[in-house]
Amino acid sequence: MIALLWPFEVPSRPSALLYHFVYLATTASELNSAGIDCVVFDGGANISTKGDLLGLPWDEIDLCAIVSEPSCFLETIELLNLVKSIPGSRLSTCIGTTATLLGDSLFQYGFDSVWRPNERSISEYLVGLVEGNHCIEVPIRAPMLDKVPYEQYFSLRRKREVTIEIARGCRFSCYFCNAWRNYGNSENYIDIDEIGRFIVGNSHSYSTIGLYAPNASANREWFREFLGLASRTKTTWKATIAPSLLGVWDLELLSKSGCYEICIGVETFDVAKNRIDKPILESQILDIVHRLRLSNIIAKCYLVSGLPGASVEGLLYTAERLRAAGGQTRINQYVDYEKFISNPVEYSLGGKSNRGLFWSSVKPISTQLISWQNKIPSLENENDVHEYDNYKLNLEAEKDV
Image (cartoon, rainbow, N blue to C red; front, side, top):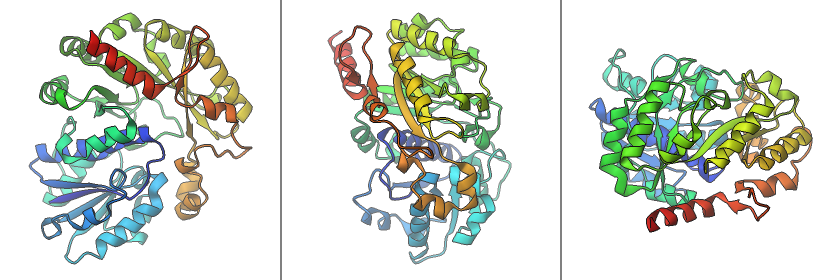
């Protein structure tokens, strides 16, 4: 039996819980499809109940796979030491972004093995460790909700939204992102029928779904099939799509198929943008943001604070321009992967992971940017609406219909 473990931590932001669906619920589903039993412990959602970890069936567990991100590196080592103190003989391995970045250097902390990106999926890697079969192929699966405390995720996020990983890999090699580091630049998609089965079997358990992939529409044929599926099943959904890939789609069609939000990576309009080789202009991004709003789709624009060479003033300018076009801004903290690799303990102690969301190497982020976080601007000079309140209002409106 495999134990999938998430370290004890307070999520850096509620939306980060989508990664718990991906690393825990999706991996559990894929292991199950390969005939491997597993149990899940999520310290992020159960931080107040540490005793639950000791209640796992440790006599049956052969392998502990600890999910680790730079934001919870210290907690990862704490959890590893706790697991090793539990009587019995079992192996431990590290998966997640920390494994991608640190590799073999994690052995010094006591891990028995480390997942290596680009070779196999996490599930294929874990099956290989348990069964010795390193050639097995495990397709992407929809999440197993009964393996994770998803109701607690909903409560923490204030959204009854399930995250479904639909693709792995990314054509863009952004230096601050791990999508291409984990699975390379080729994009591999889930079978559309797998999503259909999930919706039919679980629609009573959630209100909306989020498609997890760097570019949901990169495979046009797959995405057209999904739009048809969403329309037939009356599914309300959101996705992340690069602005350069979004322009070819009829936004009204997306809205009619149930799309309520599109997340786009803008990062900044400042000089640092030149280091992020994305084929689109500032004016094109603003046009897409405005057209999304006119199509009744929230344009959630991801900005990055602390990018090398960028300024707080440039970030403020970017947010102002996007809000004027109708876009919602969400600021994430730049994680300097090179500094983390060089000294993960020092980097973590310095607060320069996602814990230090508004830290900047130049100067503190402006209070104006903080006040705009997660708020949807009005196009009619009215007050902003917080995204959680908007989500609730939209669901109530759908019920009335």
